[in-house]
Length: 469
Length: 123
Ligand code: HEM
Image (tube, rainbow over all chains, first blue to last red; front, top):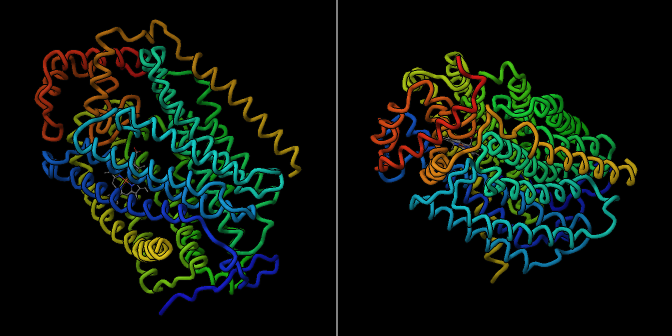
């Protein structure tokens, strides 16, 4: 059975699809390209994740060819590249139509994509040959930062030239995309301040700034991804009020406040100024609670017809909402300084990171890619296949997440303080069953996300291929 | 939300952020008895720490990968000789990088320096 596709979607306040969006909507080809290359990055990234998880169990596994110090950066860089490409793809696809214009420059956008992909390939090659810059999360040699920064400037110019005009009347997602792409540039540049001697030769300062930059960088991509979620909600419901309401703008500013100031909860154990940590603790995580509520309430406003017509992106958004609440509970718990003292640096932090990047960011971005494929490009996907991928992904992710929490709890219980787990090998052995579960559920998660990705690859490749011929 | 209010809120956040950032960059992490500056040998060690991508498996102050232990206080807890032996010969999980003695010494200098800043965790 094929999932029924809407021939059109409603843009009126009256929640009665269909309307004629698809006919009037001509998304930028670069948006499709970014989503496509993003999905490819995700699939390869997960392969390296599996490899890394197997190396937890079998330290000798491919230890010569591709040791853990290569698999981890390959995994993390590729999956983060997916989030950036998914977000950029969504912005290129939807921003112009949101302001009733076409993209300022398709050529500049193409140069952005080419630079991004070439830099990505260069980074993969340098990891493979063992050349590192060795900074956490940005482990590539530093000169790759130049094309990354340049390519990001291109999207900034293109975006603001496209939406130029009266920003104040625009819906919240236009604001979120805008602040997200600027915040990334700022935080990215900030993450290279260690090149200055006053940071380089002062490790406490260096680590504090690194956490500041990395924490805010996560906030910057969240702005882009949550902006996309708001866009989808508006398009699915046809209700323009959600993305213009006071509560939504309140959420936007709260999110921005979190982006700018909440990173300090990563530094409870760093001997830096106490007030930074107190500020962070006060505002931490309020953002997720509000986003969770907005999606939850939005769900109630949909008619049966809207749910039916947009079943695929709708269900992915709902699943992301469940993950928002699960991560929120965890985040609130580990933001309590006394708890954080023992959980920081354990796999609870990894659960927090992967729970959010997979459960929230990835599911929203997949909803975006499906919206493009089904609603805009009018292509069908098989519902049985989608259901299988959807459930396999969510159930695997739940087991995956719990297993990381399990390993983290074992470590937290052994710690006298965050830096003393002795002997470490004993801790790893005691957590073996958790790591085994982590690896197996990681494998089924890979299958689940691959099943969800395959129809997208087919449709997006087809679209690019057909349009260029 | 009125449009003027939106811009004012954005501006207020921006100003707060700039003040806050300037303060984070300079205050609370100044050089002191508990937070000395890295000397030349320790900087060499830090460069090697990055070159060998030690951060993919180890953390300093909780920042880094998780398959290996946090090394913030490793030199005071385990001693330099122990650390040197592991760095030079590897373990079941840790690769044998084939580092020179000088390289191992520089990394230990760097780790000892980090250790000296972790004053709250000595017990
Ligand atoms: C196929 C399933 C996956 C497996 C088996 C897997 C495995 C791993 C492993 C082994 C690590 C390194 C943990 C360490 O430092 O010791 C890791 C880290 C990470 N993974 Fe995954 N992963 C998977 C999927 C994903 C996906 C789909 C995303 C995001 C879209 C993701 C995001 C991350 C992030 C952000 C980190 C860094 C965590 C941190 O340092 O706190 N992973 N993963």
